[in-house]
Image 1 (cartoon, one colour):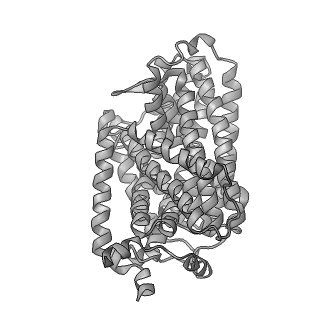
Image 2 (image 1 turned 180 degrees about the vertical axis):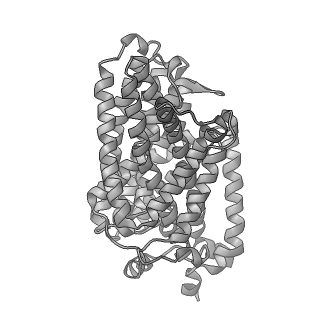
Image 3 (image 1 turned 30 degrees about the vertical axis):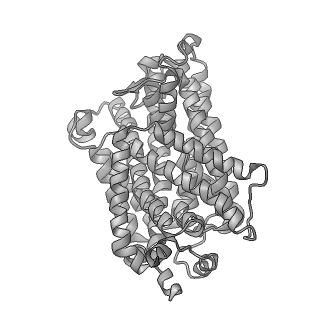
Length: 471
């Protein structure tokens, strides 16, 4: 019974408030910087890489064709339900840790641990996936300038090389930017996201003049099964606000600004995704789309080689914002778990800039390893199952907490009939998308969680700060 009570103990809201006054993180982020971090995390590899990958198809995954737009809309529906749940929690608990903290407060320590442990891997994997995606555009840009990188250092073994050096270097670059402090990375994100939105609008407007209606036929060449499988893969492209919510402790007014930033960032991203996928599949027949650098090659195919090179260059710069958002996520979740005693406190130490440098560089080297040796689809699917699991927990937790603590102060709240309807839709949609992933992804996920279970019972449960409260 004692073990059961200890693993189900919940983090008190009073502890959350006390931590706010003693946080080692600096409050420097306003509404638009938070929104930029959210948009920066959502828009990127989804448009520039995964849209082409899913539309064209790959080994074991048939192409979705022009219906890739439907895949994005299905994924967006699941994400919107989860976004509303994140918005409610972030306005009530604006602390580092995101889904880990929400699960810990509402459902208990073991649930918080599993989601936190899950997110450590998933967010690092996101950084790796994006680095792999950028490297495809980087190679396209370099080759357009007359320089060809040897395959041995520009691609993984699955793609005919040995190691993806550009992806490795990009991961380490992002770790360096993040190590400079929240004020520096906030400014970088605001400028880079502005460039990204300008680039996407430029692609949409210019590409619209080269759409051939016949390219939309057949619209769904491999049926609804492929569309749903594609939705599970592109789900990777419709979250990012969850990682942004982990920076809530660095917001100037987290309770007021976090819910707005979450909803604004998802709305902006979905509009741009739908328009961009319509343009891509209208410019080129889905069978000819290049999965590695879809838009750059699409413009090249209509005689606009220079435009393709510009897109490749801007894509490299703009996708860096996705990497930055998710590296913020993993470092803040790790920091929060260490502060709570579930992982060694050595990781929670911050420097004079308010940056947890140790976890920042561990995350940088970890993502560099994944990006350097693994193919993009494998890492993307591994990422998706973890984030979908986090969405299930957050949507469930917001329902439970609504009835367990109706008195808790909320700056944003779902009201009847939307509560519990919207979170329930998020749970069902996320579980459905999880079932569309390959069994190998499930196996890797279960193995990672089992490793986490061993660490929790060997270290986390005994060192949790809540042990002192129980005594």
